[in-house]
Length: 526
Image (cartoon, rainbow, N blue to C red; front, side):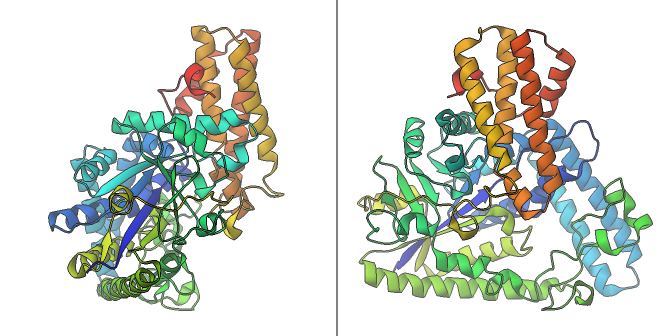
């Protein structure tokens, strides 16, 4: 007997990073690591489940910047070069470790793994979006969109056109890549404010997701808490995150990824091995970076230098234990909730996709065994929203509360003393575009300039930049990107206003910041 339904939502996003002026650029490796450690391992997992007849369900958000990068020929070619370098490094490692059976076995594991990733990528003719579409057509996935450049909508609402354009351009880009309109959206950072639904409704977006308090602080309190969808006053459907299931995976203290038998993320041969040996596989300037080849397990509460070697077989045993435990907990949780609510609950579990494979190396295997458990026991069924609404079309009407899924639940991460200067420029640039739309003559030259000005504004609106400034993980790069887009915007504005176009400068900007080739300023702004 079905006790409840499980709604897994994996958010796939990276900021648009493309540097054609360099053959090797460190921040482009964010994409390459995500493809090789998360996207392809997850896709291979889901194809395996489909081939085995397991009836799994997952909702994916694929953000417009990510879709654009995954289909960019330059980045595709660079990713293949990255794979070739990594395979070459694994072959060197097999030779280097030949007298140490423990590490030699791991080197061979990585060699086979990266060769398999390369083979899978080639089999798709470099087109990962095709694989997602195939799984969606088979009924296993639902793909939704996000803000055009992951702009945090509540902090952009001072110029309404900026919020509208983030939604409009996202829908247009989704149509470009998938040949249809999206039904759902991942609000960037789950950032919500009352009123954003009017833009979602205008562009056909039917549902979105919130953090738990976005529903629980709503008016009125939702009858079923976060365990059913709610209808907002505008007729959109909102979902709230289940804190219990998220905690078991996300929590640094209680979450599964901290198990001592799992692979350690930070201990990487890019930092461990002599510089003259590893130099061809790290930054050309000699600064150390991750290679993806990691030989140690978490081990426990010890320093990095005291880690024990990774034992793949033991890690995979732990994956099964954790998948069984997670299934047991959802079984008991749903049993209790069904008794209290009088209906089967919808347990909503949203995660950044990169948790599975990148941060938690064994994450894709965890999902594999979890869906096998769902299929075997049948008491918790994975589901898509449209399927749940067919079963339970009657749901409470609630006005959700302002919220995000950031630290402390609101916007401190993105608006603080370190990064608040950003919004002076974002607001000013948006107001400039409002002015130009009503005053500038619609000539081919002006259209080209304005299209690129809009790209520069959209790219500068990415929530990733203020986030990285706050966390200081890549602060210098984030600040450099923001200044670049702001300066590009100013240079293009001068060309529009003076009529003197620097075509060399314009072509350089267009080549580098080439996102959204379908963009048309006159149609897409505001």
